Amino acid sequence: MRQSYFAFSALALVGAMFLSGALAIDAPASPRDGELRKLLRERYDAASKEMLARRELYRAGRVALDDVCAAIGRYAIAGSEIADSPAERVKLLASAVESAKFIEGEVKNKYENEVEPVQAMALATYTRSDMELKLYLARKAAK
Image (cartoon, rainbow, N blue to C red; front, side):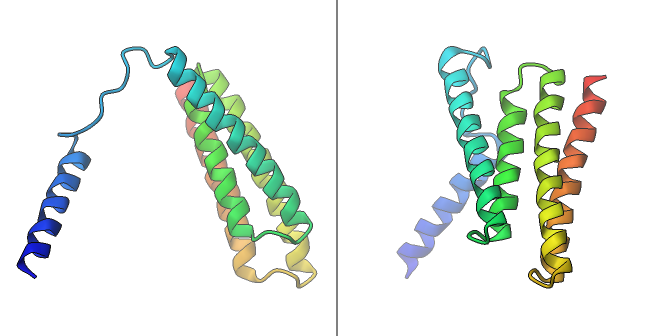
């Protein structure tokens, strides 16, 4: 019992040090080095394909709305992090907003036809407004 307490304490300490930055992994000197750029592009491409596929599967009733909204969020994050400039970040986030608006429209249609409950409508609206907030902040930063 005492050993597991010490093990847990040690793990908690390491976690706290990591979160405080004491054990943070240093970023490469150039944020656009070849390997980092390749990994960012790979992640963005995967997020884009996943988001588009889940969007269509939702339209067909084959995937849950939570999964689609999470995919839109991942797509926005990946797009924000791969952008080389504030203007490109705005463009990529505008694409995430359009996807969120599309899904919100689909959910609204299903909600009005009593296929989706009110919480689905709330989630879709939250996702759209969250993407619009990210876009607003990116536009503000680009100025």
